[in-house]
Length: 353
Ligand SMILES: Nc1ncnc2c1ncn2[C@@H]1O[C@H](COP(=O)(O)OP(=O)(O)O)[C@@H](O)[C@H]1O
Ligand SMILES: [Mg+2]
Image (tube, rainbow, N blue to C red; front, side, top):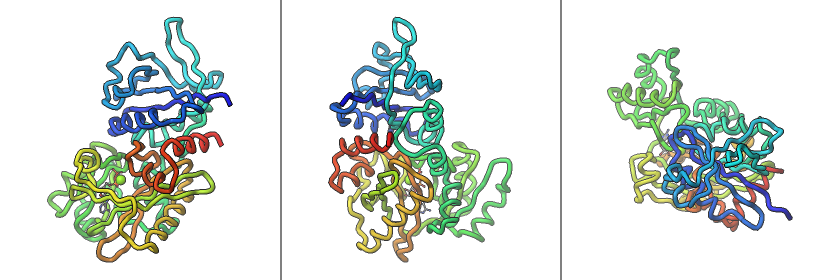
């Protein structure tokens, strides 16, 4: 069988640029080279596109864009007379045929439907959710609204839009509708960027200002008390398999950016320390939410369980979750018996099916 060219797109104008560099390095090292010829399409922090042909370690260390000898200007071409990318070589612009794309991108401009839109226009098959599901899962307000409408348990939340909502009334609204503490979040972000836990009214404004630095829309959520954080890995288009739930024990007071990526005291368990019945109920809810949101390929669905009452809410779906071979999504799938390389292969197959 002829090998397929798989373009791995990484980096991007996103607060999760570094995470993407780590994820793509793992994919590059493990993709089945009997079946695929992978190519790296990198997007810098400022949004410049290149074909990168240098050392993968430079990607992992986010130094690839300084390795100028190994960079060629390259773009996914939206014009369907080209199936793939245009690459600038010594001989001018040349076509690079691409069979399938794996956008190994997290957060804005990658996981939020925008890259998916470009790939749709270009007519290229790609791994993961399509435009609407990606965008809906990215916006915490839209996602809560859709899931609530379908009867999936959610935390209570309030939405504030810059220039529209009565921001001065937020304190009273929290008092009446949620109670303290609350979580203040940008509607669109990721990796806990711009998120604060607010325990008392005097800290609310600062937290809202911080969240507004990342988005014009923010949400304020009631806090789940002593939460047990569990995550399921859902894989498939129609027939779904689910790994997990696994459990996260953040080193910080909540799973902040630091606790996620730098504090190695954050602990993870591949099997959440909850009853089998609870785990089964969570897997079923994860599958239901995946279908309701119209997900495809993969999504990690995260839940919060109230440590006292056991009440469970769906916290958020992540349509392009951290994807190194030690990230939760791949590990939960590997725990079902599939290798990391097989997982990549399966995702690429699902993309073209
Ligand atoms: N309503 C909540 N109650 C308790 N903890 C929360 C709540 N919302 C968020 N958290 C904590 O904050 C972390 C980040 O919030 P999350 O909504 O998952 O944002 P991100 O999309 O940035 O991962 C969670 O992993 C959890 O530790
Ligand atoms: Mg999260």
